[in-house]
Image (cartoon, rainbow, N blue to C red; front, side, top):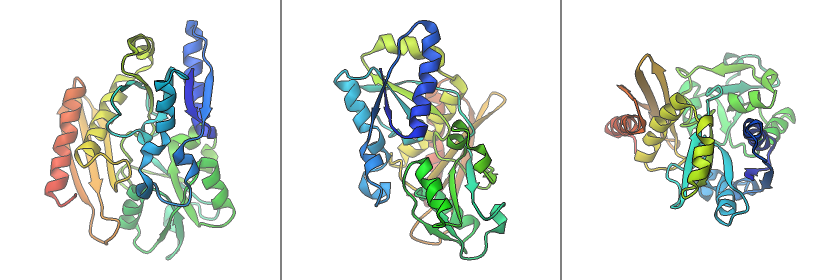
Length: 296
């Protein structure tokens, strides 16, 4: 049994995992759930408990045996899981970039001064301000379909969404432009799916091991280690993105203050990462460089 949120994207993700397990003889069904993160739409996540609100109900279903596994967008998973839970695997990453979506403007550069851009992410707020301080950034909550509807109803000139979600739902045509990481550094774990289990379910960890994608797992481990070292909140104005260049894992991070117009603090480093300890040590190193540069 797979525990999943009931948004269209979350159900796609759970069905995707189901489709990978069933050919190996496993009977799989879905347990759809509405989380606190889905219910609270009038306040930013940073003010009501962070993105962990998207996973707590699913973890309760794992704990009481209603479900065996939970499928998450990794960027919604807290940096430190509660005692008794573990990530069984991280799957191959979809496009990790952010997407510019607009009903009126074909390119990011075409937005006029004072245009209203919607996002609920503090990371996107500080990165957008660094790119275009002349824009008006307004809050935007809800699942992917809700955000697109609010854009189409005229509430925003443009919105910024994860490219991965749009592509997974066959909505790639809504993407006007993608932001390259040099423009807008992605969130830790963006584009990757993770499967969570109870930490005592070694049988499930063994069963799910073939779904793991090692290079993705190492990259996101480095990214999440930056966030963990900076305080662990999924809702901080922090970007972290790692890629492999040959044998080297290269990690870049950026931090901004959403309350001031201070410049972004940036840091980067690289290492040979053969396993999770080296990847996580790289993340801790980059976080230390951010703090040395004034991030907090």
